Length: 575
Ligand code: F6R
Image (tube, rainbow, N blue to C red; front, side):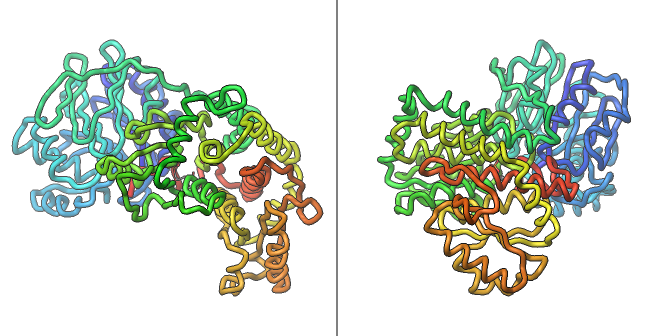
């Protein structure tokens, strides 16, 4: 994944790079580092904040920074970016993965190059230096890099003695910002939007250069001046004030989220005309394919479980998806940068099939590739675990695929259920305490509740590090029950009274094997905690929010890094 940021011709380069890295840390936080011209490189395996505290008052008007999610080479200082070439001619930061880097590494070793790290990125910088030693035309060298190195790369490059920065875009995201004669580069526009007033999003295969005296982009051998467009982007200066972490704040934000959806999608008690038209086109579409990864896939599963007709199929974004020209493909992605979905989007575009992207990042790569972009309206979601964006996805997709006569009433009922669960947050304390003592847990459900178990279980797993697995109640006895014991329990979920008995029976079968069991249901006489029933299609919304709260509380008891869980990143931009 990784986040990169660069600054050319701004005397505040250091401050802007650190601020940019803080905004990019959601893309990975295994290590961080920066380069400031002419020769300062600093790296850490701690968080970006430690770069800030250790390096005050560095004056430079050109540099770059990197925040890493390790792919090639373990987490260590030597593998942290920026990487410098062997003869110190170039420094670069890289976001992406190069698959044939070993082939070039061996070639370069034969040419006398010595490598300090295990990364593919150091191969890029050394290969660039090697190419430059053969032909000192940078445009030729960058073109050759793109041609020879297989995989993904967004690069920001500094050459010794040169006042500017070079950039390369192949696969991984990159934006170039400008204000007056200063230039800013980053993986995500939010890292530079406070400093730029116009932007250029390079296309795949493009490379170029920015400095005080010259700037250009090269596409298919043709050099042009860069066309910057004036655009405004959402400010991300959100804080978690009043809450112990962003996750908890974002769980509470979900009441406002429903208001934001209402404001964007409705007019009076109905969907606004624009969305009515989209709804009509979905209804008449030959087939709808809902595709996502992780929580976004769970949102797709939820919608599919509401409608077992053959009109909707769901796919995990990384799996095989057959593209048919006359079908509709809805890609769900809060970041809009998920690698597997971008690869799929390219295929959908090639087939000229209809593509709708439901995203929380309207300026993202996927949004820019889609025919129609649906905004999740969730506002900036800073915690790595998805909360608001999951609720936004299922709410918006019910509005667009279900017959709801009074949309305002529908959304008000959703809000009431959320508020009720939030008001009784303390009721989860006891359950969280008991669960925090376990090593493993089945989330047991049926039908739509299985989708809720998948999402609730994923949330608990990723922020508490407990082993959690969603389980169909009927499947438990066909093998999985062999694993339960006093540290491996089960939590039953039921949002339909018709499922209560079946879940109860499954839990009883676990309990008589001395494993702890818990039950959350909309039927108040059997549930550990009471919930307010939501409207048809989002009946279990109170329990969905409850499972988020439960995950937060367990993770809090276990003293986890809730907003930045280990090994994760918010934007999954690699294979
Ligand atoms: C879990 C979570 C992830 C993402 C997944 C897809 O809390 O956030 O499972 O849902 O990585 O990301 P997007 O939605 O950005 O495509």
